[in-house]
Structure formats: structure tokens, C-alpha cells
Length: 371
Image (cartoon, rainbow, N blue to C red):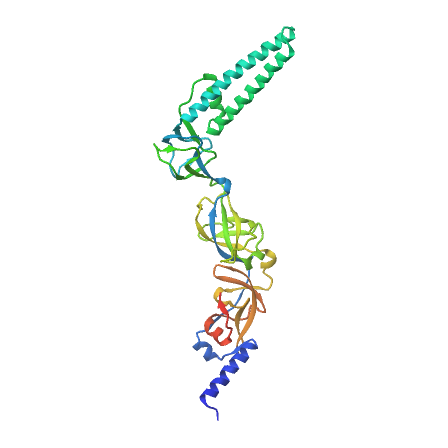
């Protein structure tokens, strides 16, 4: 005689045996009681992709600290955070004794060079007339070369301090020292941060502004390592909440995987018209996968909740005449709440889209995790 416990044990064995065979026996009433609903898979159109999180970053050359190249007193700040500036525009002014000393040294060297040139021209003429020896002319020639090199050294030091060639020419012509050192923008961009205040005493190389060039920006996309194989340079990247397709294109795929997240950085270059993005901003993106891996042949779209993982494999639950079949599929992309899959499916199948937890419990996959 069968006891209730024996009947329950037989039922469990029957379920497990059926699950191992790839099918869970269920009648219509049991399906309704478990709240299981089904949808027909839709043939996939277009390439698949996957969703990820990205951060807007600047190329290294597009993010610069504008510094004081000489020590001095910061007398004026001419721009503020958020201002757009042009290359060469004056951003700040300093009063610097060191800058004045550099100019004085240049003028002293310039005058010494002029004397050396005059001496060389005179001795060249005297040597041609046989009045002075060749050795005397060689000494004059050497002194001319020394003063030429010294003058160029002082010009370079002033260029390094921030003077332009036009300023140097004006200084050499007028012999008048400039009392203010002007700090200029190295390139066109936007002032992202002010790092000093008027009246502050600055040391050499002290930061004044952070300047960013927003004409080129990148997306650093965190991509799980199992997805990397399908990503190719040139792949289209769409950004949630931003109009237009292909806001960026993949330019490089990271080779290092983060030990904690098991993800790598895929870098994409934003389109030139992507003015709505801001450096440091996090955005949700969708990355198109390689066409060889995302072609639409024998591919279907189903809701992402329909796909279940067990170990390293993915499965869906398909309605049969006697219950629900556990069918292994390949996920080739996830986008907009829809999963692109391949497997032993056809357009007439019905795939479970709710009651998945109950089906997994009956299936007995211990490590199954809903996607």
C-alpha cells in the first residue's frame, strides 16, 4: 500500500528523471497554477548586441594642467570655470621677479652678441688686409659662436616661461622689460577647474587651471570577459537617452581583465556631434557584436527573463504537448530587454516568460541563475 510519503517520493523521482531527460511533465492546470506564461520567439532582425555601462573620458592629450612656469604673485585671473578659450588666449597674469631677471639676462646676452658680431666683421676685414693674424680671427669667430648659443639659450628659457616669439622680438627691439608674465592656453578648450586664487604666491609649476579639449571624447565600456570575443573594432555603440544611432565606434579592446569584476575596458570614440556628453559621466550603452556572431540566420528574440543559466550554458523552457522542454540555447546578444538567441527553436514554439523560478526549481538545476 502506498503511503503519502511514498507517493511524494515517487513524484519527486519522476520530476527529476524528467528534468534529466530535458522535459518537465506538466498539464494545463499545473501550468496555470504556477503562473507560467508563454510567448512566441520573434525572428531576429538586424545585428544583436549587449548592454553595458560606460564612462566618458578624455584622451590624455585633451586634459591639461595650465601652470605657472615661474614663481610669482598671481595678479589677475581672466577666465572662470566653464569658459571656452582659444589656443594662445591669456588666462592669467603674474608678477615675477624671476621673469624680469630672465629678460634682463637675455638683453645683456643680446648686446654681447652684437658686440661679438661687430668684432667678427671688423677682424674679418683686417685679416683680409693682412693686418691681423689668422689666430686672432679664429678667437673672434669662436666668441661670436659662443654669444649666438647663449642668446638662443636665453630665448628658449623665456619661451619656456611663457613668452611668444612676437613678445621676444618686441623685447629685443624695444629693450624694455615686461613686468607681467602672461599665462596662455596651450590649446582651445573649456576651463574645467580653477586651482589658484588672485593674490596667491605661486611657485614654479604651480597649477592655475585645468583645461580640457572636448572636441574628442571616448567611452570606456566595462565588458564582461565572455563578451569580448564578439566585439570588434568599428562596432557601433548606442547610448541610452541620447538620440541617434552609433554615437560611438569601438577603437580598441582591452587585453587586461580586472580580477574583481572579470571585465575588460572596451574603448569607443564618440562622434564629433556628441556635444551632450560630459567627461566623467556614466552612461548606459548598447554594443553591437561581431556580425559573424550575431547574424540573424536561425536567431530569435525573446524577453531576457526567459533565458536561464545553469553553469556555463543558457536554457529556455519551451511548451510541449506533455509539459515544458528544457532547451539549451546560445545567447548572442542582449539589448533593450530582449535576448538574441540561437538553438533548436522555430517561430511556432512557445517560450516561457513567467513562472521561471518554479520551472527552475522543478528542473533541479542547483546553480541555475536567471539572466
